[in-house]
Image 1: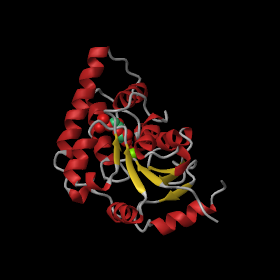
Image 2: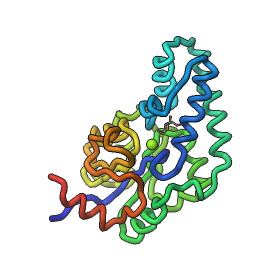
Image 3: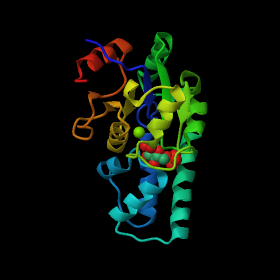
Image 4: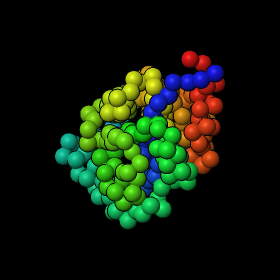
Length: 223
Ligand code: G6P
Ligand code: MG
């Protein structure tokens, strides 16, 4: 048995770095300032989703309507809090197992790309030193359509000069797994089965995830 995966595209927040909790904290602060509460459970729906789409979901949860100007200032205030948190990040913010896997992939000749909806990805890559392990970076500054649209991952495959079918995507968000599947890629979920039941492969986190573990699991998937 074999597989044809030649490149891996990584989501950033919640896969390579421990920033999903910062996004949650910043959205919760915004919700509270608007007069409603926001739980970790509800936050699952915002994971992987662009800033604007996240705000729209949050407002619908709070049953609130804002004018365009108010939306702009709500997004600015959420982002200001978030940037304050990530501005203090160090390489310690890299999630366990991520660096080992990226290093091993580089040595094994497997291409790697970032596929993130975040406009703050450049700051995070710089603060954590992750940039040098990625052959390509696609982030929210280059995309116009939010996950589950496949745009971000198709751009990543293009940068790596690979066909979608030659790429595996690591994602912690349901919208991201869907985006990768819409792109025609194989998917590895990072998280829990009840949230990511559509992923081809599932890991609780990247600890112990090696190229040989992945190759074995990929070979076992139906083609
Ligand atoms: C990632 C995160 C989302 C976030 C989005 C936009 O996909 O999972 O929670 O809303 O990026 O991030 P940004 O940093 O541009 O607000
Ligand atoms: Mg994510």
